[in-house]
Image (cartoon, one colour):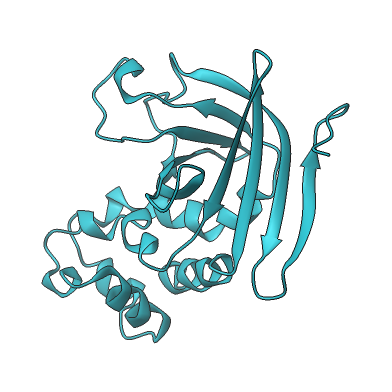
Length: 197
């Protein structure tokens, strides 16, 4: 059996060397955000905070992440939690995060107060990704380093609740991928007729 915990952590490590620059348009107004990744994000994205009955997970997020990569914290261990079924879908989304971000998705300006049901998620943007198997949600918020710097704060598969309800649709104009280690970049999506220059 594939250790989806290790697999998703390993793939997330590759994203730490990556930034995505996303440019959206709505009513002739442009919004640009820089999506960054840090190893401390993985703990919450994977939902490990929800496994309240596993005391070994009450450590600093970066320590937990390193333990996963060193295979001292495994899927076998976390699957013993009574709450594991609450995070399985998060691991599936995380395992495919780079592929999802490399795709053309539906994008929304997200406002917690506009959801027609209770939600704790405080995010600014929502990416909705659909494939033949499932619909995934990725929530993005400012990470505090500057106004345009953002991080993924939550991800999971659609179940009963539609998080796009009452949210503001954004048109994706351009998506650029930057590789930090060699300062290279590539445009992975550009809407017809749009030019950033």
